[in-house]
Image 1: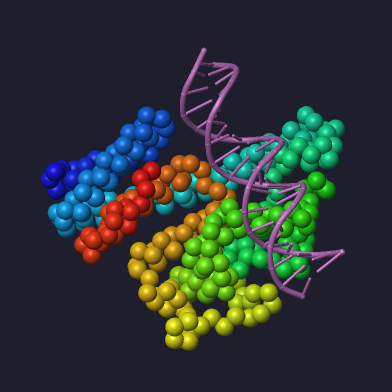
Image 2: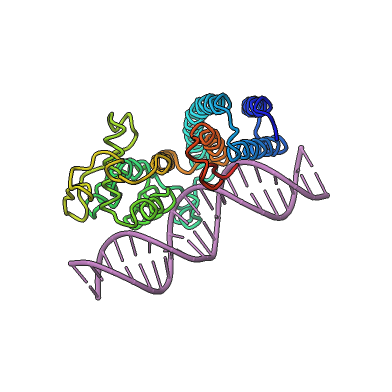
Length: 307
DNA sequence: ACGCTCCGTAGCTATTAAAT
DNA sequence: ATTTAATAGCTACGGAGCGT
């Protein structure tokens, strides 16, 4: 059994290893080294937690390490968004340049058949994020999105088709995790998901610009939903009112999953490093959020999977 | 019948890791 | 340094199910 001092040293060593790795590269052997370190610390803290010997100082250190890593992760996400934007711009400019100079005779149909042209999804993304509580555009909404998108098209090949928009929304709901969220937290009930989304929006406050998302109108299939709390028929404005019996951990996981959906729609799916950083953050948050009342719970409830 | 959503999946590109 | 294999992400197709 390792002492609390050794455990604290391990935590700090892990943080140091991670930060120095992020300052250089997160590839190959280095990544494996960090994964091994994370797994080792996970096991040690878990063992200490189960035996009731996890000292408050160790727990607090874990919380501080978690906060620092989260700050680093936020910076990395911002940098990642900027890099993605620049990469897209560069790729588009290069593509246009090559189109206009090197392959001027290639037909639009040939390009389309190759399937290598990505959609201009900016307006669809924007609509999705403004209607995150119920991202099912009506026919007229789709036509309006098509008009906005196609107004920017420089050629016929860049025009978005109605069926492409339909598929994009279906695929995006699935791949962003929205559909999974619907099943996991709202039992497939879209009205309940709308209620959850309203609670999250109320909880976060601010504007669409500060949140990057909005729940949209309280309307499903043309019917305006009265969002009431099932257990006492009061307006539901907080997650706690929507889920009166749920644990804080459940609500936090729900919030995290919702943010992940927003992030995925906003910038597309994250690359591997981004996912891994998220896992590391979850690991550190587990350290900071595990409390003595969790002692009776199985290990899976205390720790999430290591990266 | 028609329109819509969802699901499974094929085909493609870009990226990354491993092998040479 | 170059090539090859594996993987992830994206678009699109076909079919099933559902509601109108």
